[in-house]
Length: 57
Ligand SMILES: [Zn+2]
Image 1: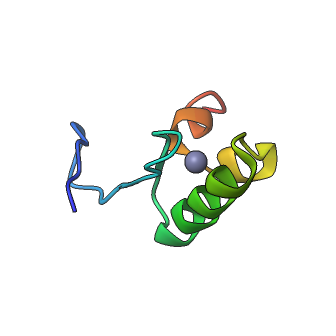
Image 2: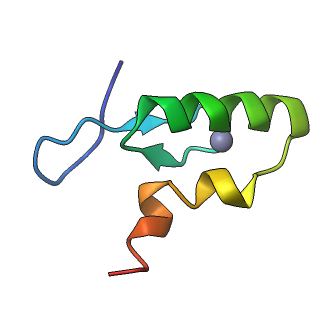
Image 3: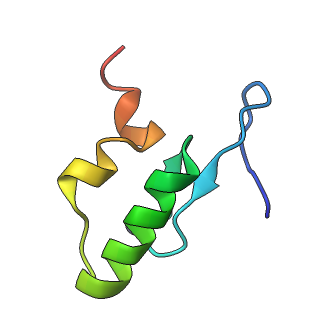
């Protein structure tokens, strides 16, 4: 498993389908399962991606 995090040593999990990153492996698994099945993103799931968390500040 490779991590491309540049900041700190936080372990991130990347969804292989949509390339969003999660701090929780559980969310990555949910995202991957959803992406594979629906070929689209579930807003409730991707809200947990770090890409979307950043906007909250
Ligand atoms: Zn995904």
